[in-house]
Picture 1 (cartoon, rainbow, N blue to C red):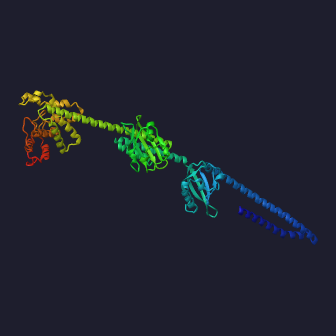
Picture 2 (cartoon, rainbow, N blue to C red; picture 1 turned 90 degrees about the vertical axis):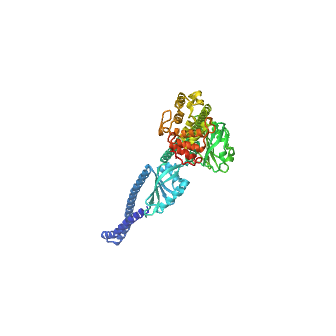
Picture 3 (spheres, helix red, strand yellow; picture 1 turned 90 degrees about the horizontal axis):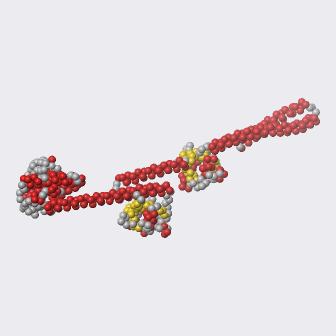
Length: 580
């Protein structure tokens, strides 16, 4: 503006000087031509002066008018350009903001006004950072601005920084900042263009939250399907709760199946073990109330004496503030209560509360499944014990019916199991071997007492009947599914290594290994038992020699070697396997 004025003054002055010079040079010669009389010349000089004043005034007026008209055209053009620039700024879909070096707003467009929710006059000339940037983001945003005005930011920099709107809500803005330079090339401020990405950020955050929830649900599904160990399930569940809701501590109280009480089951995040002594009646305290009413309970401050939390002494020193209790309900039955505790205020929104309830529901199903599995396992164990007790009862009854002592079956079963273990049998095989040993003479139920208890020599016909008992055992047991794997001993324990045994005349390794093992134990017990009514017992050394003598004919040599290796302490005078 000042330059334009100086230029106009100089222009008018130049024209006035040119006109004055021409007037002086020309007017005197004209007067000398028009008049010779000095008096007349004087009069004409007077008129010439007035004429000069008039003409020069007209000239100046003309020049000034022309300058004013030119200036008006320039100003109208500039005003139009400014109006177009303002229009462009206002229709732009981004915030346009100019700040001076003093951090004050010098220009903001309509989009910026809409985002801030304030009229332009309340924004202009105010310190941008102290007024419109949240306190948590001021240091970083101001540092970037100062680097730019110091010329350290290059041509421009992109950054994301929030702004505060009139209602106090934060808006996420993606900014691009560039320095503004004056006519001399110095940096006079910063021009910032910003896009409001609040909606996009919210969508991204919601998507991330949904993804996190899906990951948590997947982790819980894996937890439920990968194990039935209740302790492992509860530990993994509490770890998920703490990670997902960022709380300091969490625990689970389970309902006692035999009493209306909640008892400690698992915890995570506690500084001390006091919470492990938790025991509440259902309906008592916050957790008991959550279980009774089957609804979540939250307490903003556990330090309030009226909070209803009855176990303050168990969490003394933990410094908990916030508390949540969520019932664990599966199939309409309360299984327990999940407790969340935090050392600072904790506010879960509706979506978080719903997801916590969903996690609690899944956990309740896992607890129910694990409890049911544990009960089934215990029932199976009880059933197996009952089966084994029944088998042992059958074995004792058979011993009493036969001529041998009542402990024969018990002794021979224990020895058979010992040999089988020494030969590397797996424990699942040992179970069936023991059952087969207990039932080795079950077929004798079908043999008449007249034959079974006969003290003299059996006739050929009686012997044939007696040798039917392995087949009778097979027929009796093959229809019982859980005893089918134990049939080898009752069916084959009278088969001999050389093929001379009965009922099928099996030879060598055709004979099941369990039956070959039992045969050694059965013969050993028969020759060393002290209470046989029809035979004097052999000494252990004699018995070892007898067993060696049967190796390769009646008995499997490998089984004999293993057995004698177990018995070498009582018959060391003969090398093991010598008779093999």
